[in-house]
Image (tube, rainbow, N blue to C red; front, side):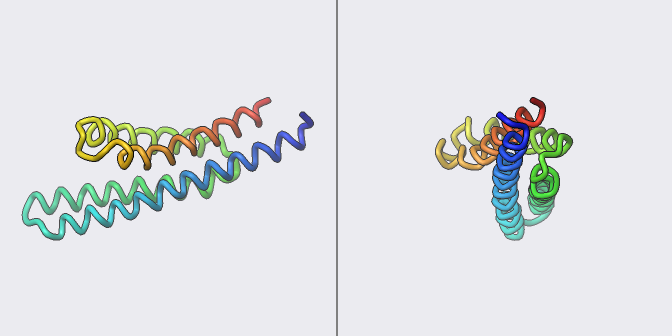
Length: 132
């Protein structure tokens, strides 16, 4: 495959991956808002911990969203690793703590990680094409 075609293919894959990470981030901003609303109905330490969790979720969501659109969009190596690790870690915790014990059904529980997996696959394929 000619080098120009490879670069174009890698660019398309990088952008698809970036869009998947952006969708992941937007979804998790909504989750952060939902957690904050849940905390608003609580009092004391329970309220504080839910607000803290909402802030953590918002921070992670915005991080993945910004890195996706800023760095993954261009096929950046650092952006690749940052989102792979941060979103991967967050979704691993979600699956282990919420999905596996059955607090949500399997299909609903695996939709958000599917966006992460798609983003990881697209950006990995893009990185591999750039390296060749």
